[in-house]
Length: 344
Image (cartoon, rainbow, N blue to C red; front, side, top):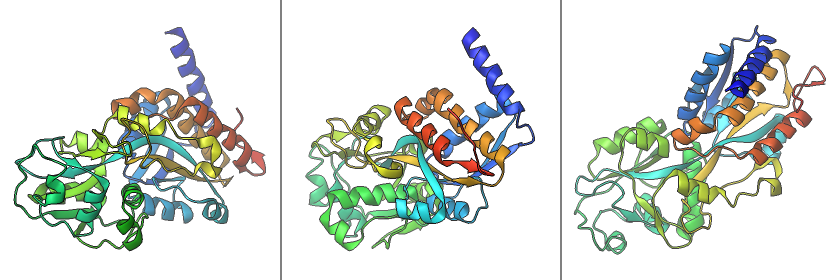
């Protein structure tokens, strides 16, 4: 108890040094929005600092940080070194989670439907049009699938969740890879588009026979039905903190440049195949020294004190050895007026 009080007092003293900064702003991925909201709420109670975060999709976050209209961007689609360098940015992982397949079939309970990558790809290519298609029935011998049309729902905005989903499909379906590929926005062969998790969820809920993809915490909070997926090891698994953690266990952040790592279709008996990290984007050269320091203090607090809140919302916290690498990056790369902003 004394240790917690001491850490709190130290944190409050640190933020007091930069008390002129009342708000930091960010924009981007919808994927981490629930945990960003929780972290911001808890941090404000301790320090008084407000976080104004716009959940507008990863594409919007990249655009806004590129335009310098926010203090940080957030993207579930990591940027390659060439783009980071050209923009003067660094990126680092903030939290890990998963995207899920959600469906609207009154006859089929939650977590009763089995799908695999190839069947999902063919559904989103528009080749599988009905729920009782033999290729879905083969995966679900114990279910009586309805003779209903499938309504495909995808994101209409530039989305990191779309990046994870289409990257997964490109990994497991050669036809999808050749015809569509992956990215935050793609040329969808079929279906209707919804903006954000909210838009996709709304269309799926309105459409009997609908199928879409959303971030897991959002699906869980909104009591949406989700499918089990066949993973690389050939097992049908449920999305959960445990299956996300299994997929993330093989992540070798120390072997990649600029934390560019994609966690889809990882091996592991119980690994969830659409797992990914959400990344923060900031400028190496900061214009407001006080704000830069305050922003990094917030991220530092999230790493060191936010794990419980992340787990409560079904995210995987960034491991200590990884966020130590991140903070070393801050100390090395982030400067303001020619001076380092962060010291370990």
